[in-house]
Length: 154
Length: 456
Image 1: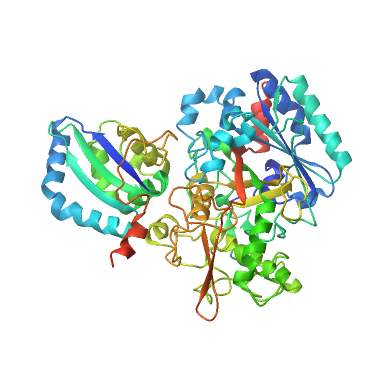
Image 2: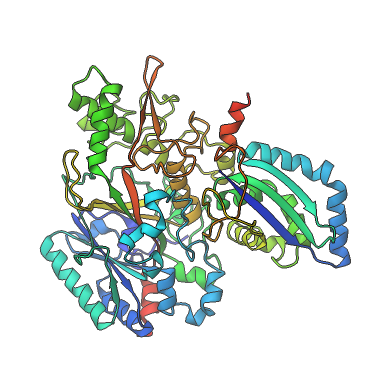
């Protein structure tokens, strides 16, 4: 039973932020991707993950499907990918500096604010971080978790 | 690093009372001034310090919800609701139903007998007394103060009795298990604990803990919560008839050579991890041992496959001691398994046999901690899905006593390995425990209670 993260981080439009954005874009595959790959694999709660920048370069977008509670998920990735999130929140317009955001409460609340609800309704009546019914997420494997699926592939 | 000022801490936080009767009076504040007057009237009766030092005297404690604090105007001089909301974490939100596994019959829409909502609860007065006469007198005292202050009492029963717990069979729970054996040892006087105790900051707000952050962490709100604790107040229905039926039907599968009564005791022990007299299976796997009934000095190191104590037994999930955590949880809980302070008492009359009498019975539980997410909610998540440690072959299993089979994807199978390498799996057809209500409360310090009441 997976949740969907649709994290839309608004990017500052000043030259410095756009430069940092370009740096992330240029170095993502070699610098950030291996770290994400390791954290995601170790977590055994992440089904899929991708990162993109919208064509107008106004949003940095993180899309994932994950098992477990929203609070647990956010805290795991805050603790395990601090350098990546520091970059993201440095160029973000709104949530505050990384020093302000880098704690359990503020990071989770910032991620809640940046979450965009999917259309439709969860088929399992799953709740979003506001205790409202989540948007629609197609599950090809029913409510199975990563921890259940991986052993079946061996 | 000053010692904890016991005079500023409500006794409910510092220990369990041995009084056999508890009562929880739930109120809504209708008028700010009235609510403050109510607190002011009760303040002289609020119990502080170690409950063991209070002897036989009645114990009265007060907890306040987020909506209660707002209704009392507690934050009026601190920037109001918006400023406070940015300082608290999760306490100011409705209980998290997914973390509570509150699906099916346990869904929040059914809570509090559908007579009110968790968000309607503003103030809970927690009483602990030694006799029915005392219960009547102290209740009268509280209700008179409530009436003077125009407080609205919230009742879960049409008959008008507040939630009242009574010890049954010498502090046994409705399923027959001895209660209150295992409590974390806390060093109340040092930030860095000594002698293997847990740091006070894990439970008392305003003190550092190497294990958890707690919020609020900045003044004035960190001062406001200092010497208090967050508390999840839970009312849990227990289906005794279904539990007894389950034991009768499944015990012979587990222990076909034992007499039926002994086989039922054996199955009950496997589900809890202790025999019903309290004896840990890890210390005495084959029979209860009165000498070991209250012991808590064991771990699961020499039982990695659950042959003595099944991996999903209640106490092995609720406090898994030295078992390994998975990678996510190693990161989140570097100090080991999360703990809460538990206070509780059964409510409702005893039931024997398998015929349900339609009478409400169960457990009133209070779970105290400094970080609701990492302590209370985490334990609830793990009881409802045993995926927190790689030792569990079934990563969607549940605690066999409190599991909710309506939670999507959950398995209601309970596997009991034996020494010969085989294992017996029993399936829970009916859930034995149903959530009847959860309220998130702050058990404030005496100073904070005085300050909130001061405007009266």
